[in-house]
Every structure is written in C-alpha cells, then in structure tokens.
Image (cartoon, rainbow, N blue to C red; front, side, top):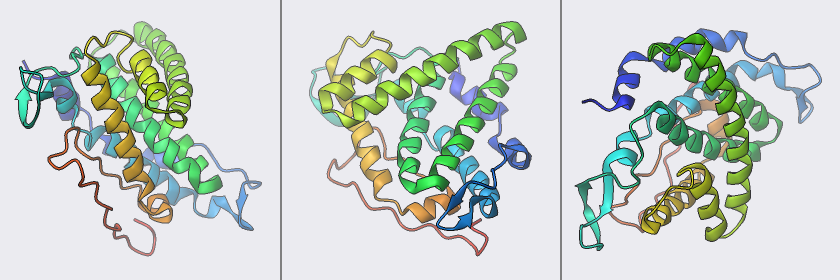
Length: 249
C-alpha cells in the first residue's frame, strides 16, 4: 500500500495556490521598514513565502521519517539505510501534519530574524499552511463538518507546538527533547535513540538555515533540508546563494 504522503503529493499541487498570493493579508500603510513602505515588496514576499512553505512539504523526505532507521538490529549506528520504522509514526494525515509543522516552525524561527519583512513573511507561510491542510483534507474525502472540527483542534495544537518548540530551541538538548517528545511523538516515543536523532536533526537544520542569507530568503524563499541521517555527520555545508532575477523571482 502506498504511503499516504505519496498519495497526497500526487493528488495535491502547491502551485494551485499561486493566485492566492494576490488575495492574502493586505499590508497596512503603517508597516514601514527602514523608511520604506513594506507594501512595495509585499507581493515578492508572498511569492517567497509560498516557495518556502512548498519546501516544507515537497522537499522534506516524509518517507525517511516513516520508514528509515539509522540503527542496525544490534543497536549499533549504521550509515546504510535500514528499512524499518525508526519513530513508529503511523501512516496518517496527522503524522504528515506533525512533520510539516516541525519544518514550518523552523522556517518561522529563521524568518523572524529578518525584521518586519520576515515577520510578515511568517504570517503568509502560516496562511498557506492552513490553506494546504484544508485542501488535503478535502482530497482525502473528509466530511466538511469533521474537517472543520479537526481544523480547530490542529490550530490549538499548532500554537501549543510553536510555544513548546520555541522554549525547547532556546534551552539545552534536554529541553528540546522534552518539547519534541510531547509534540512530535505525542509522548509515545519508547526508544530514546529516536528522540536523540530528532534533536540532532532539528539542531543541524537550524544551523543550516542560519547560514543562509536573510535577503536571499526574503527574495526567493528557497530552502533545502539536510537528510535525517548524514553520511558524513561533519558535512554541514554552507548552502550556495540562490539565483534570481531583478524581481526576486
């Protein structure tokens, strides 16, 4: 049976929301950065936000989270890929949402460092996320009433997760592990090695995002993700600067 994430990827295209950019949250004329109205660049930021959200759902290897374990049956760390459920996440829509939420949160943390423009971009990313969640729920044939109730629950879960992850990333690895255990694993992670691997994953992704140029991110929104298991753990490379035209596209 195909993974649910494959079905969602095949039947749902992020590109369908490009027209939504023109209808997103308008920018107030009072939102000014460096003496220049933010509204002059808002459209570029919306497009970059769409691309950044797209990176969270189309550049993340969901199957890696569902199926890959970096440990051999002996408990010894292996570089080779072992086909077993490393975090025992069920193949469900909720699991897809938890993985997506984690990557969206990492993008939000990075973009909040870019002043008013970055914070505005965060609002658009979150907007696209909820548009995507609703669309995928419809693709799955979820009853509209149930979908609405689930959206309320997921919204509450989203804000609780953001708060917990924010506290965790500012803490030591024990604090981050606690946040991931409560939210990502729903308090059901029985193997501490899986939790350790996820903490390492988040730390290296944040380091990777921090190495990216903020102006490039605001213009392009292009983000790539490090693999869950590095062939060479020391190879956290600084990304190449993206290319874009004079309109930031």
